Length: 185
Image (cartoon, rainbow, N blue to C red; front, side, top):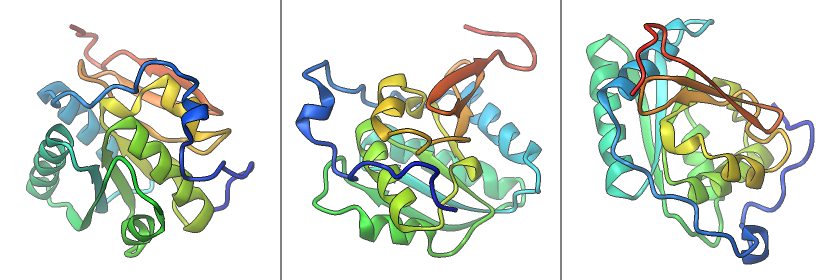
């Protein structure tokens, strides 16, 4: 799937950050977040069985990825591959190709926002990655990162917040829904 509007260069230049505060680092995942993310994937149609996991190299993202992989396998799902990437890279092509190589039913991402923006830009430019088949942990629901990714780069990306709410990106806008049981922190 090619983007409707070409993404900017994968490399985020300092001028694009506009001198604002740094994008936040991921927090550790919560049980509510993990359960909501599993729920999103099991409810997805067409049915999701195979996934590829992607994560940045920080401890919180690694731990979230490991927890998700274990929970997904416990439900009978298959993890085809796990790909990681640094926050900064000279080129994002190699991790982007590894991330999409096995054509899973869906991708699941736990990452720091800045690295994810650069990875997503490269994915849209150079692979058959589909953001509407991608699910993420709470750190990806960062409005500044969504804007930085570029128009429609992340259209259809969805995920879970720390309190178990669901979020989704539509045409560069982030929307959030309360958890199904109505409980929030």
